[in-house]
Image (tube, one colour):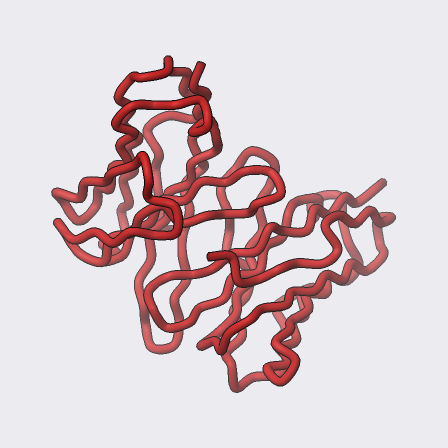
Length: 114
Length: 110
């Protein structure tokens, strides 16, 4: 079974803090993704990576950065946390095989910025 | 950008009844997928239907796809309490990414 592990289920941070969200996958997938999920808005893509040290902006990258130094690990960084970044953050990994592009998700990190 | 939009936003049914939810999207796709999310958890892939397929079954799930109308439906038959969850459609436009809708929240009453 594919396992995508996010380092924290719940996190409380203060405005202005630098926040690191870590994600590790054990299936040797090329692609990894960070989403945020807010009520009524569904999942919005923040950043994704299709290879080590490669990153691409998603739909809402402002205020975030990412790091992928190793294939299995994809980190999301909030450079200076703000209250509007309070949200559920979901990491996913996957691989494109033929016409299939299935993603496997971690359990999520619920971040509160006070 | 959010391509898929699910309808209805919420659905409440009795155990044993069928649940149907719909997804509409805007641009051409390679395939369409449905995911389930239990409360406070990550998403789990349920089923994928390719753009050249019209119907697909998996256990109690039935998915249809109408590319001319840019729409899909997910039917859950003989619902159970364990089917209580949010369901999301996701479209794959061949660019590594999936675009997710806002989801349909299904509540199955005992």
